[in-house]
Image (cartoon, rainbow, N blue to C red; front, side, top):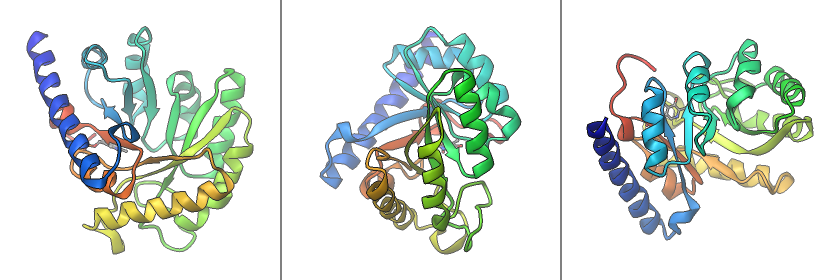
Amino acid sequence: MTGRKDELAANLAKVERRIADACEAAGRAREEVTLIVVTKTYPASDVRILSELGVRHVAENRDQDAAPKAAECSDLPLTWHFVGQLQTNKVRSVVGYADLVQSVDRARLVTALSKEAVRQEREIGCLLQVALDAGEGGRGERGGVGPDGIEELGEMVARAPGLRLDGLMTVAPLTGQYAGRELAAFERLMDLSTDLRRAHPAANMVSAGMSADLEQAVAAGATHVRVGTAVLGVRPGLG
Ligand SMILES: *Cc1c(COP(=O)(O)O)cnc(C)c1O
């Protein structure tokens, strides 16, 4: 266990240095960027160590793994983010532990989240997941609403009881015009955030950047980076 703590501490220090350097290069204050550690596929014991090391935000992408982990870690001062594609039949479970859902991408999901948040007397922060590779009126390969669907979906979240519209999230596209152009993709997300904030000034979270591209996300203006591998190690298999 001590070995794992040393390993995670060293990895966290490296990631912290990368974020600090990226902030400095961009002329941004370090406090403008929040680190969210993506703990998917890793055990609750790692989440506990991360909490001891000062991590305050963790993210998960599959309810089956996240629900028992969050229950085991319910005594820790952590904010839980759900970042995976979310089926409506998992909403009841996810609303039980997630403080924010970053993968809101369709009306049916908004309705289900709202209903369940009201039932459980919770307020859920919502980020719209934007698919920058979506075609006109379409959705992304890995979920996400196309840029032209943001306004309407944002309005729906803002009006939904039990939900709070917090901002936008994206994953750098692997296909389409932004493939291999992470900085351009994140700058586009930033422009979309500026548009959204005209109608919803408080929806100022911009969640972008992972282990491989957090520098580009910080350069573009992201407020939250979601880092898994660089802190916890390479995940076995898919996940
Ligand atoms: C897994 C995951 C991450 C973290 O990815 P790494 O490359 O391991 O840093 C970030 N965001 C989402 C939505 C993820 O599913």
